[in-house]
Length: 115
Image 1: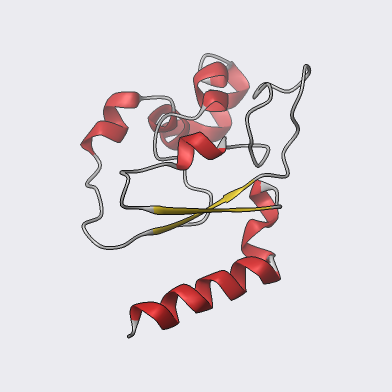
Image 2: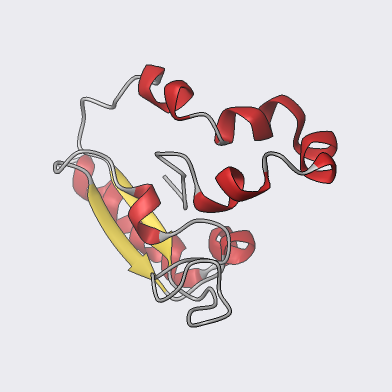
């Protein structure tokens, strides 16, 4: 999983009442802000790899405070059960899929799962 929100993301909870957010994100944006939606999602029953970005802004002016994040999703928001492996990479949300490091991590994970 690449930078998935596995619980309601902070940004969705903060923005879901804003008209522009509702108009652009529509049903997807509504579901992102709805914890009940996440509770209905099935959980994987296999070894799962989650890759979370850490290059988002932190500090006083960041909506995430000092939490590690990718600019859209906090690392903590990607967590599933304790059996899911979370790897942190220095990337922002929109570029994480283009990271050579992420490609290498995915290839290694897939190769290991074939054994």
